[in-house]
Length: 312
Image (cartoon, rainbow, N blue to C red; front, top):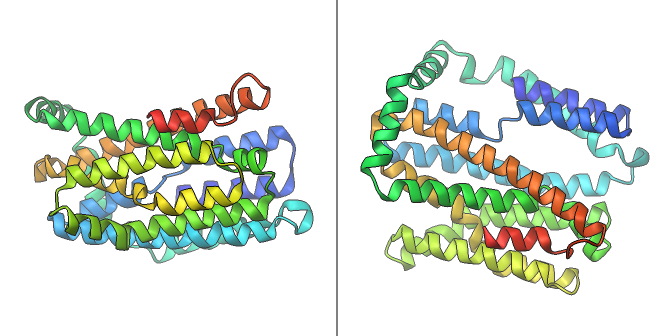
């Protein structure tokens, strides 16, 4: 609910004023309260017992988010020409207000059971719970490597996603509608990778998650390299489609981390992984924005943010 309220205020500020100060304040406000799916994932984990039930619920969440992310950029790209470019912000404000109303009235997060579950999950973040987390890390040699890999993956993806639209405008001379179509295709491929590509890869590799993870991470690196060297927008579309399997790296990594954690520590680990991915994405966004600014000044190559993402 807090995230929806902050987004409503953010979109209202961006609708009413286009000054750099107003835009900066809006983005800071939205960034401070944006859940990024972490709250939803924590609620799913606190209310579901067993890996199968959690996987099913998280899969439904991914499908819902993927559908919204595929439709949103396509619609907003077409609205950029309305009312001096503030059309997307107006629609976003209306949707944010609707989400706020739905969250306050209908969502089960405000039921007594959910509140008690959330309090229980927060209670796991005590000193004893933190000690158990460190003990699990020490006793499971592969777990720290999975966490580091997850952080580096989010770091690289955050470096590009934060500047992707500006980079496409500079590299291919695209307008908002062109960039919206490209982002919508990426979101659609992300949804397809979760529903179709990832299960097929699991079946082909005999459900060997480490091999699937290696393939997904390799596809991500190839995607960034191909985009950095794309001569025009058509090659960017080809690169995005051919490396669609790379979108499956994050859920596979999260699943590997959760699999090596006892059932009693799932709530604490959910909070830990959410914080880890959020911090890594934020740091990546800062690095990517600085690299793009230097590239636009001529100090770096225009593909520097993508090369950094490939290196991660």
